[in-house]
Amino acid sequence: MPASEKRLVVFVHGWSVSHTNTYGEFAARLEREAERDPSLELDVHNIWLGKYVSFHDAVRVEDLARGFNAAIERELGPALRAGQRFACITHSTGGPVVREWWDRFYNPSQIGPDCPMSHLIMLAPANFGSALAQLGKGRISRLKSWIHSVEPGTGVLKWLELGSSESFELNQRWMDYPDFTKARGGVYPFVLTGQSIDRKLYDHVNSYTGEKGSDGVVRVPSANLNASYIKLQQRAPTKTQIDKILKRANTEGSDAKRAAATRDALRDLELPLTVVERSRARRTAFSLVEGRSHSGDEMGILASVEDNRRSHPTVKAVLKCLEVGSKHAYLEACRHFDREVERVFRKERVEVHDGFFRDSYTIHDAHSMVVFRLFDDRGFPLDDYDLKLTGENGDPDKLPPGFFADRQRNSDHPGTVTFFLNHDLMLGSSAVRHKRKQVRAKRPGATELGIELIPRPRSGYTHYHRAVLRSTARALKDIVRPHETVLVDIELRRVVHEGVFELTRDRVPHDFRDQPVGGRVD
Image 1 (tube, rainbow, N blue to C red):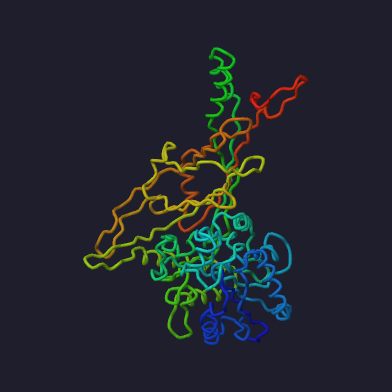
Image 2: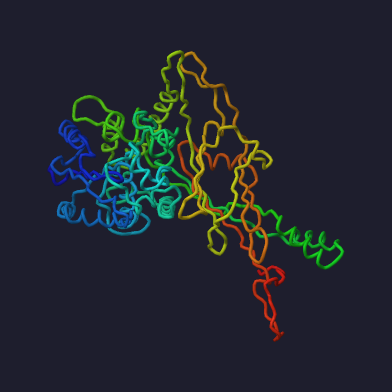
């Protein structure tokens, strides 16, 4: 095949990298594999290594996307205009950077120029962020799992923090992409990530580096682009509800008591949440890579690749991705990787730690991530609230013990909070065995899942009502999917009362700091 018809290859590194040695021997190994197998259709004389600056505070992910576009045009422009395309292999933050570029310059939701990228192969991508990003610039720079001998940039860290507005909006748009494999020539995205922890890189001060359901830096659901979006909206109080409140209040003696009873009843009013919007991302190839962690020369999904003839799980998976050249082949790859997820998950379910007297075990359950974004019907974000998951009959104590793995609020947007859930404990788990030994008994799961949101303030001139999503089996299946993330928008009704603004004809100066709250303003 003429070189002009072969694909170029572009590597894009992760966050806080300052040297191209981060790619290790992967480029050389890929060149070897392409020469051995011409059907891969790779132009081995045109393998490009990305070099982007993520360690300056002012630099943001959208800046990197613009810079990537300029670099592609500058260095690859003639070849691309001649009809060549490129396959992009990314690591960690490189995935979101290239996705931002794809979304910004070749928006799949709109008719525009054909995307010059044929394959986007993301290794351990932080597509929904990383729990480590909130630790702070100085503390992260000391972690062995992410360290690259430079201080990290806060601009990129803001994107990487769980629930950031930038990642939420990019991933919400991702839900609405049409079939990207049907574009001219097709664009084929893949997510390959590990779920193993390199204990040599574990930081005892920061437990996230050994978090189950992650590779030590990025959670498996945070990498996976097979995600969902749900919007919940709080209903308005019905006339019947208001009439009951007024009827009960009118039984009180004085006007002051009746007014106080009305305020108390309205404050305690509970309004249900209903699903008003729902979407699901188009199927994206996703696989677990056996025995791989985020970083490290021994287990790192990128750094452990060597230029030799020995089989390597990352190389094997990447070559499988590069073989895809049609929608049919892409769907077959999706099915192949689905089987691989099941195989790797079963094989790595129990991690054995050798002990002097007896062994100990770590059970690697499947996990799920839920990102809640809370705001009112006027667009104002909520800052002060309690958000709880509930089980049968709306009781949070009816959920299985141990299902809740972590909760993290976004530091820039307090109205956004991310829950990390143990999927297997939430839905129930059969007994877990290693060889002939039972290491965990059978666990019953929840039968229903609901939400209880207690916003503040609950009374005054402007306030909110408590919101609930009644426990349902359907909500459980919608929200908790293994290895996946769901984005949930919750919109509350902002209640305003007449007392917030009054007119008077009384010209005698008087203090109105204790102005009555008054009736509701529609």
